Image (tube, rainbow, N blue to C red; front, side, top):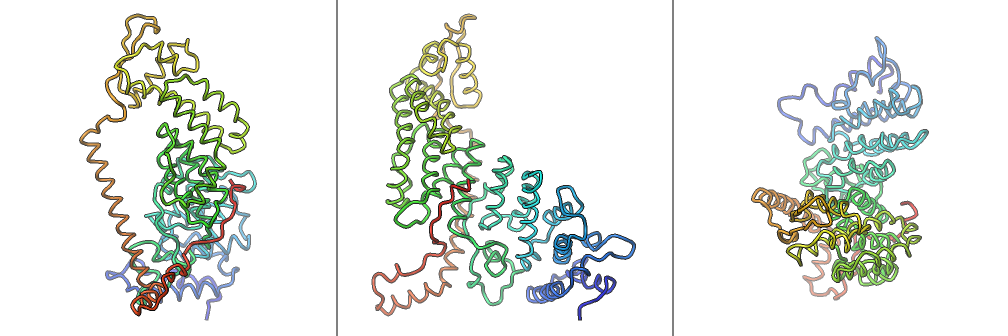
Length: 500
């Protein structure tokens, strides 16, 4: 029978997990049984009991520790929010601070048993930050902490990931998004059908998709649209921080996403940004899209992105022929309305600076030395401002974008000469840089191999796959049998750019 007063309830709420922890931790089966029993109790308790005061003042939230008593703290917190017994939750209010304390300190194993309730707190914090005076930045750190506390690898995509990047875009807290975005997504929440019979949510798994499943409900339903939104929003954040390589990677994820015989609007927008990001990163647009891009998608996005391709062609031709910037300027001016309507104007304007930078780098690959006045004529928006040209070149040298030295024979910058030391594109790495790069690549390879092994294991337990193998063994399967399998995660396409 459920307790009827706070005095008899409190000992039961504090009984699990045992504290201090026993010398030998509970076996998974025993842990699973105990925590499910506690969850049943909490589901039976009325809200007025959970929000009741305790002897000596205060309430249960003042006694429970979210890092130890994760389930009771969560249920009591939700009861307060739902009943409004305390003052309405608002940024800075006592209830808001309790919610942040929970997201900062919850036990990542216990919360696997209360996925729906966990997501309610996530959405409550988000909603509070977006209502009233609208301070989305207030929810950024709590949600980031929650995502990485639940899954330190950040490799399994959840609905909270999308909520988080939206908040970061709205709050313009781009750097704050990087600890989550920097983690490559390898998996989606699994259906939970491939777990071994002796495993529980509390068990230890090789990858986080072992416990982030449809059954644990730590994520809302993931749609095709959700995944594309996450990657393009992430790319937009990297574009804002000028991390061109990472932005290009996420844009290519969007472009190569499984699709039917047409592209989505988001893939069209991704292509436009991909062209601009390639110019900013490499000074040219690749001659083709990634090999895994659907031919129909490639054809469609290119037909709708011709203005951007034209811009890229003028950019490349101008640098190769050492033309001045006027033609590129004219093209940008002509398409000003289009760039603005596509929300790409700021990137297009940065292309002008990239044109100047890559033109100077091209000069380094061609000449041993060149008068500053000639460099200004070819690259400067004001060729007569020789001092500005000198300052720009000094900035490039300081950022390791150029290996050169300025010979200043007089106080008049018109007489100065830039002497190139070698190709910027072939500058060798130091021994320490080479070692660091090697270690990073080894770590990435090891992580990827782990996820490949886990994917192979899940595939080997997939009922459709096993049936297909049986058919092949019996030599009676038609050649197209594999084509009849439903591809997990392949959903109807939707236009999402209206949400950007």
